[in-house]
Image 1: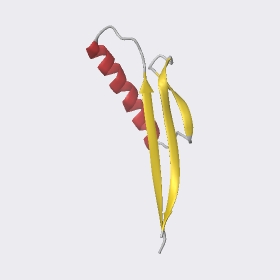
Image 2: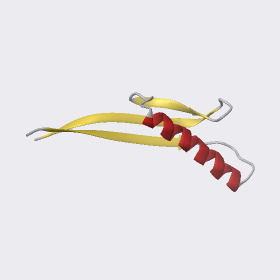
Image 3: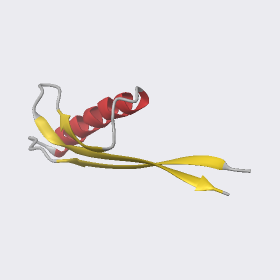
Length: 72
């Protein structure tokens, strides 16, 4: 019997200046929530994608790699 197993490799790098640790944490959490919603909607293909803040400014990248492994 053969089973298809899809694997997802997902790396996120965010880098942005913030006036305080609390603000930095909030902005990072907001960005990660937006990314999670986009992942659930299957909006990413394999490769690197820009991560934007709420104002449309680039604050990092997300790398997505979908692979299918065949198990015997």
